[in-house]
Length: 215
Length: 218
Image (cartoon, rainbow over all chains, first blue to last red):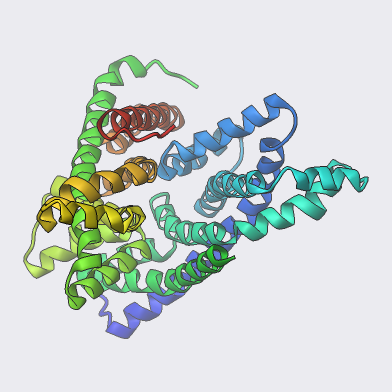
């Protein structure tokens, strides 16, 4: 058996945490891009486009993320795509994030007074210009707190990708635990690492919320 | 896509779904109770208790549920506390949910005007009666939609407890796909079961809340 010192455990966990961070970033950026597309459909004038987008959001918010990851992992190979845990994890979390971000931003769009649209139209802007120059910047600005809050949720959600075999923090900790038989220490450290990543963001989101409440 | 295995698997899926429902029912009751105590303690308790509750909330909210579950199931036995999977899952889910609902219930308590307490005290009610009969019902009414969402989220999150071999819906799906070799179809069917469960749970809570609390939630 290999002997693990305390620092071996910490070092290995921190090395694995890089993948947690990377996956969170990839899913947040990917989810932001796809979420923007979903948002366009969700607030479009066409009734059917709105319905499809609502259905998409309800589907991802009404099923467990773990199931979504399993479907990615086992479903994409059926389409003939060779898939590795990283691809399934990043794609699964991207779609998951897109549904939540689209819904958050939609609430921002809905919170704007209709006069903003009218004002844009009266300036001679067409629909996309209106969105880009007037509506979306304001919608993003008032939903910054929940967006950061969702990022925290996303970071925590990356833990589930350990179950489909992606080598991030939790999967590495399982392996270390199997070698050292010190679950209390290992999972305690993992919780601490997640806490260090998430807590500053939580505080930041709280500050944004307070500032928004004052305004 | 092949679903020939489905008729023979319905029993397993139903059994798993029942366990999931049991888990979320226990969690909802215990979690809500705990969060009422927590929210009240955070407002009126001694300083040390207030601080302890605040830390508890932060720690749970900033770490993944899966890690909390592993910590409780694998970590606690080294302190001499050994739980069977079902109990560990219920404990982890309750502790997790309470951290979120303490904040929600607390917001509800803050939303009840102070005049309500003063009026009740003036009528000669004892402070515990004031809390249980006057403040709490009004607070629950305000926060009911948020509470409903949190319960549904917890139900979806409970899929994770399959990882410590609790025989709930996801666990049954894992077993089925290992037997049928139809992974995608199995998880697809079970995902749809979860979707139906979450929609039904939301509807049940909304209509129940309307009847019991008169909460005007949509």
